[in-house]
Amino acid sequence: TGGTLYGIQTFGAFSNSYNYQIFNNTISNITNISTSAVTYGIYAYYGGANSNVYNNAISNVTAAGSGALYGIFSNFSDGKVYSNNISGLTGSGTGNVSGLAISGSTNPEFYRNKITNIQNTNAGGTAFGISNISNNGTCRIYNNVIGNINAPAATNATTPIAADAVRGISITNTNASSSIIVDYNTIYLSATSTGTNFSSSGIFHTSSATATTANLVLRNNIIINLSGTTG
Image 1 (cartoon, rainbow, N blue to C red):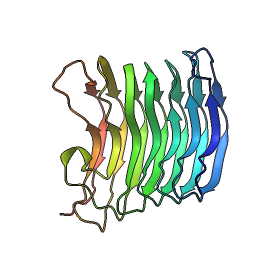
Image 2: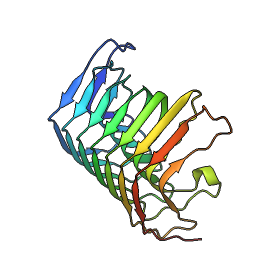
Image 3: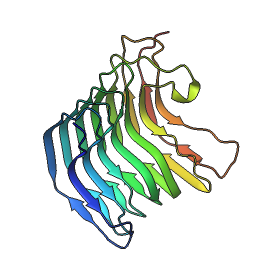
Image 4: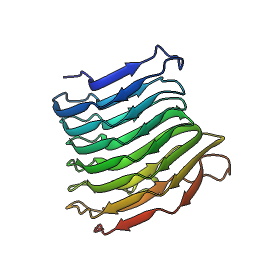
């Protein structure tokens, strides 16, 4: 009832000296029945500058409990995640569901990924295409295609920073001396919810009064948000 589930896991013993190549894998039809554990399609942790995650297909992954669900979770230093196809992720708990999540990476790049059919069916859950939780240095997110992100029963929190249950790209990084370049992405949202105070964002960024904290460069993206609102 409490076990974390991994499709593929790399763990470099808290060292970035390992260079991983994770490619041409199919991860599909996985269900985590744990009531609280996190679920990962690919968990790429502590990889070096020449690490790459590419040409993987992740589909039909379900998490039944309150833990988060990530198609790909990246903690690489200077590594690249590209040309992956992530679809059919479904969570039914209060944890976040994201096609691709970034946390603690230094100077990473994420590009040419296709992320579709991501949903969280819980009233307190959220669903994001790409989630930048934190990065150091400069994170580049470009040339990705994101669509069909849904939270059909979500009731949003009413505070602005937690308001959106659905986001194409979510950037909540607040690290000092960091920046995020988001360009040439295509995002299409058409989410609806039976919950109250429902809202969505094509791209969400946590602001800072300090110019060098999570500095955002946003350019040449195509964002179509036809989602409904309630409340």
